[in-house]
Structures are given as structure tokens and as C-alpha cells.
Length: 198
Picture (cartoon, rainbow, N blue to C red):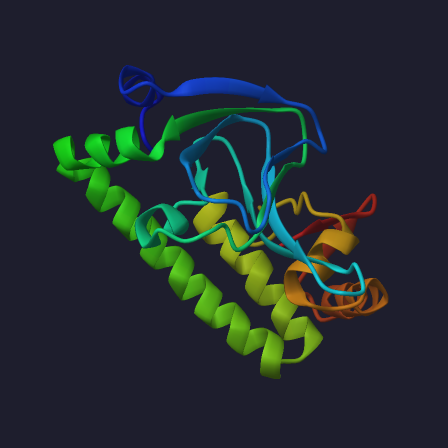
């Protein structure tokens, strides 16, 4: 996303997190731009019953939590380290200075946010109206094409657990298991050594 040298030049700090550490909580004031240097981070919410809904996963070079910086609102979700991770944080004021002095970076951020908004719109439609198999294929195809940049049949090894797929799609784990087996029979997925490939 943004070159690490540029983030550090504008005062960014690189912090280390252990798996399970929380970077920020839903309802907190948005004060920093975050970008993953290594590892994996997720943004999530919990409903009143304690069920997790995953908003998204973020990997090396990807940023997260930016919309509240521009809208001047609180974080709508939590951010948590999925693995041990290093994350660069840049204070909001310095981040806005960086964008003002680097229009090309500003455009990249705008394009990224537009793609995420498009993805969210699709997923809302999927969750409200589509069959489980269709929901699963949509999320896997999004990750394959837009996150991991893979092409061709069965080139994408899904690094999500069945529980994580359920949390991303609003399904139950049992439904995800049944649907992935059905999709394998239809030739949409391959399962090798309990790993799913798309």
C-alpha cells in the first residue's frame, strides 16, 4: 500500500503484536492509520450472543481502519492480530499530511477504499439473499483475485478455517462443511489433506 520508508519518514512507528492481541476496539476514537508489515490482522464484531462476525483479514502491505479517520467517527469494529504481527501506526494528523503531499498515494488509498466498499456491498447482498455455496464461492473468489492475486483453477490454497469462513459469510460451521463438500463434488473446489483449494 504505502511504502514503509514513507510511513516512517512521516513519523510512523512499527509495533509488534502477539496472536490474539487487540490493536483497537469497537467504539474507540480513530487516532491512527494502520498498515501490516508482517503477519495477519482481522477486523471483527460480536453480536449480543457472542458470535463473531469477521469484517475482513489484512495481510502484509495492506492497511485497515482508515474510513473512521476520514469520517471523524469511532471505530465500527475491533482489530485483532490473527498471527504474531508487526504493524506500522501513523497518527491521523501525520497521515493526512502524508496524503496531502503525495497525491499518488492519496489516489491509491481512495482506490483501495472504493474496492472495499464495493466488496461490502456485494457481501451484504450475498448474506441477505444467496445460498451458502454461492456465498462461500464469492468470498473465496474475492480473496483469490483481489487479495492473493491468483489466477487459474485451484491455484488458491484457502488459509481460512471453516469457522473463519462461517464468520465471514454469516453461516454456521456445519453449513460451511456441508457446502464445501458439495462444491468439491461439483468441481468448484478441491480438498486435499483437509485443505481447500479454489
